[in-house]
Image (tube, rainbow, N blue to C red; front, side, top):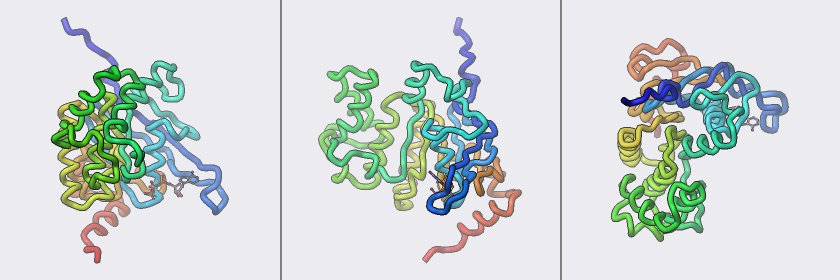
Length: 269
Ligand SMILES: Nc1ncnc2c1ncn2[C@@H]1O[C@H](COP(=O)(O)OP(=O)(O)OP(=O)(O)O)[C@@H](O)[C@H]1O
């Protein structure tokens, strides 16, 4: 008989009335409420997108979910447990299971480290593979993210890769520790439209193959529409609208959402 695993029913990540107040906003003095009573859940194999203009609190939310920013009040739960109360063992599980891909892989990949080292070192340190198996496993990961022939990429340095290839390496590294959730913080924003489409295809395929969830942070409604199960629209630290792609695009309730939707119809020159 297959035993029921109760942790499977819990959201991977759940924020409840999350508030982050920065003590002084950069250079201007005074307090800045970057997150204001934000509640949201990311379920298994779900993509929840956070969209909003610059300064709306998206990256702060991403940092909270990654355990890099403490809440002023409210709670953040990882698999049903308060993030700041995890035991040492649970915290290391959290660090493996929640990964991030940033906008600029050029800055998150060490320019002096080969692709093999960038991906393999973390796996060996975290005990995911033995050192002797690392090369073979990195080759498998490179194949999964579409960098083939994988062997030809092992000794390559980040500067020798195109923007799209760097982002594929960033995803290979993110999946190397067996994550449940990837925070993609403007992960497509530095790419042109055709590369964005390719990375979106990759993200969906990784989601299907590995059962991943995504917290997808973006200012671009078009990429958000292509991948989301749920969209949260943020303004001034608050979630002002949430719903499926159809809800938000076809029946926006909030003026700010309508403004974002209208803005994307204006061609940029
Ligand atoms: N460490 C900090 N100290 C003080 N204020 C901060 C800090 N980090 C962010 N802020 C402020 O908090 C607000 C939210 O910032 P945040 O970076 O989360 O927004 P964002 O939507 O991700 O914007 P962007 O897309 O420009 O990164 C902004 O007004 C920002 O200036």
